[in-house]
Amino acid sequence: MDYGAMGAIIRRRRKELGLSTQDLAEALGVKAQSVNRIERGDKGLSMDTFLAVCRVLKISPEELLRDHLTIR
Image 1 (cartoon, one colour):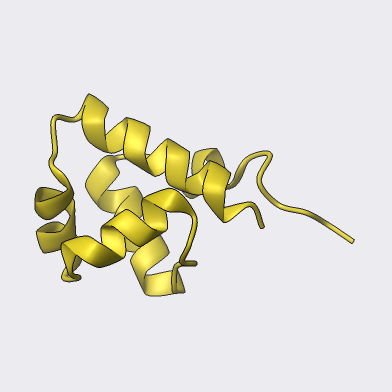
Image 2 (cartoon, helix red, strand yellow):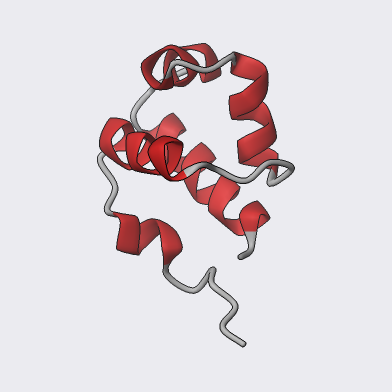
């Protein structure tokens, strides 16, 4: 899984929606620091957080995962 690429998509979509890091953090029930780490690709997402990100950012799970999975 390429968390850096996924984080870039999350950051881009958050900005497209005009949300601050704090706005997204509050909507997800996490700290802004966690959102920063996710967007940098330093931290993976739990399934619950992943689905919440998709819901809040109005993005499909497929769109967020597309081209970012490494299948072995």
